[in-house]
Amino acid sequence: GYLRGPPPLDIHQLIHVPTMGTFQLGSAVAHPSRNSSSGDIVLTADTERMPGLELFADPHSLDGEQNLIGFDDLDEEDEEEEVPMARPAGWSDYQASWLEGVDENDDAQTFCTQQSIDIDHGEYATSLNKKEKDDTNDDDLDNDFAQRATHKASLQQASADKEALEFPDELELPPDVTASTRLARYRALKSFRKSAWDARENLPGEYGKLYHFASFKSTQRDVLRDSQDICGVADLARFERGWIAGPENTKSATDGDDMEDGSEEEDELEGCIASGTYVTITLLNVPPTTYATSTTTFLTAVSLLPHEHKASVLHMNISPSNTSYTTSSLFSPLKSKTPLTLRCGWRTWTTKPIFSQLNLNCDKHKLEKFMGRQGFLALSAYGPVTYAPCPVMVFQPTPTPVATDITLMDTSVLPTPSANKRELVAVGSMLGADADRIIIKRVILTGYPTRVHKRHATVKYMFYNPDDVKWFKPAGLSTKHGLQGHIIESVGVHGSMKCLFNAPVKQHDTVCLPLYKRVFPKFVDTSDSGGNSDDLVIL
Image 1 (cartoon, one colour):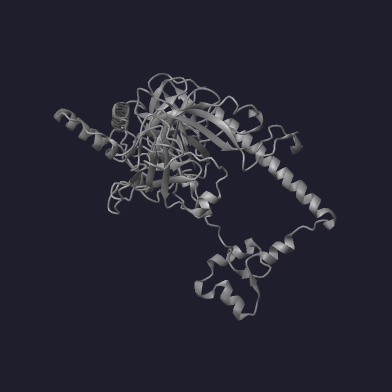
Image 2 (image 1 turned 135 degrees about the vertical axis):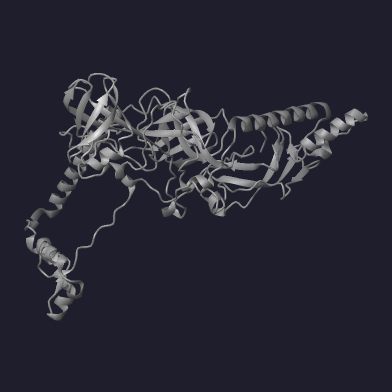
């Protein structure tokens, strides 16, 4: 095909074919005439100058001592199901609980074996206590029960999303949960804008595979300036000497100064083909299945700039699409870490991004749990390095409708989701790649003053044990009416505490304890399709 665009094609660049992947360029043939093979210029890539296809870095096992691998969020841990203990057949859970005090040498299984008594794990007792059902319409009852359970779950999810939208940062801990354990990774900040936060502290394990830039703007400026310089040299060589491809097509000048200029141009244009030339390119190591599964017969090949095939943390400035909320009353809001498909320039991949605010005068950016219906926000995701400016489109699979009314039981009126269809939810542009951008999640614990005396107040319902009060005693407090204070001491054994504020407290005020932790994007798990849990498939 024909080369389009201002810069010439360099055979030592990587080539990306949309919907197929990124490949190395083996050779290229420049045809001065499309209908004739005479005068063809063949360029072969030097294997030593070929850029690699490695998307991720290979960190040393002894580097990155700050990475706490395996320190996952406590609320995301999967608890293993406990297997009921062995007991004589027919014993209930209450009867079997008395066997916990039996000596290990005389446990229930040994006793039942000696006495020839059948043992189980509670199945027989469950079957005895199971209520009899009418078997006449089992299928109808099961379908009705499943429909009602699905409808109830959708209502609960819609209610939780609505509450989270109204109070996005407030967290209510159950009485049986210890706050110091549940919020172990959170910290208090005296000032969100001015307090220091180390960008290299407590990084996740996948950060060791990503590429970090000392200054992405400087790198982008140097790469684009080099590309513009090559464009200028190629245009001048083609206009003055009819250059098409390779250094051998350039005619040398007679003057000494012109000879030096010509040699410099030959070095810069070595392995390049002028824009507008009809070429035949050969890509290396293209899997036959990749081309066989391609649904298009017209292919587009795009050359990548330096570093554009390296994975890092990308940040994009996006805004909701005008068509993304046409049926907003039927769909739940879009949350952070939801699997989304990003179309960034010519490349497409699926990842789990997070949303955050765009703070111009602060090095920390607050996490947004949901994408708003209007306004701008930043989207951060793992992906290949892309230089700005570059358009971005965000797609999600057609969402599952959520019934918002208890009387809405006829699901035939709702649109049917499809796994193969995607909906455009946001558009925007690329901001850059910065793995050190700090995105902070905030949670707020609330309590209520029960006894008030001028600047002193006894606060309840924020904690439920005195150990948590002592743990969070150094943290500062604030109220919804703008007061500042701190914890003095714990009162009693139920988590009440005595607090002091900088002004008299009102009885109807609410005491807040803001806590913060850094959050990161996530990879989409592709282990089911033969990939790794931390992998990117760039198409």
